[in-house]
Image 1 (cartoon, one colour):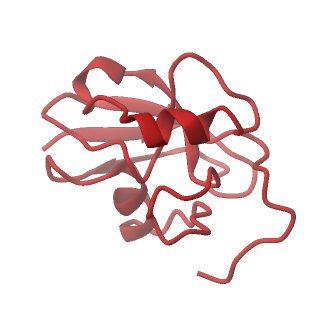
Image 2 (cartoon, rainbow, N blue to C red):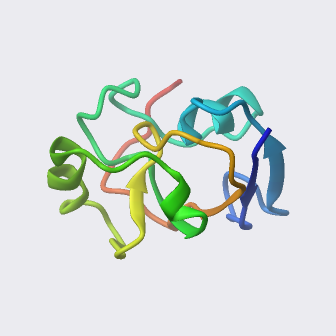
Length: 112
C-alpha cells in the first residue's frame, strides 16, 4: 500500500504524519480516516477548495486533475503548480508527500 507523508502543519498535524492507504483512496479520505481533520467544507464533492494540498513528491502517480478541479484550484490560497484538491487526488501505487497550506479561503471552519 502506498504511504502518504504529511509535512508538519501547526494545526492539523504539528509533528507531521505518515500513513498507509489503499490505492484508489483519495488523499482527503486517507487523512480523515487517520485522524487528520483537514477541512472539506463541500463534503468531498469538488465544490470548494478547503481541502487543497500541495503534492511535494509523487504527483505524477496520482490521477490527472479534471477540468472542474483545475477551475476551483484557481481560487485556492497558496496555489502552486503541484497543487491538488485532496478530495479529487486518488492514490495509485507510489508513495506521496503532501503539504497542507497554512491557510484556506474558508472564513469559518465547518464542524466535520
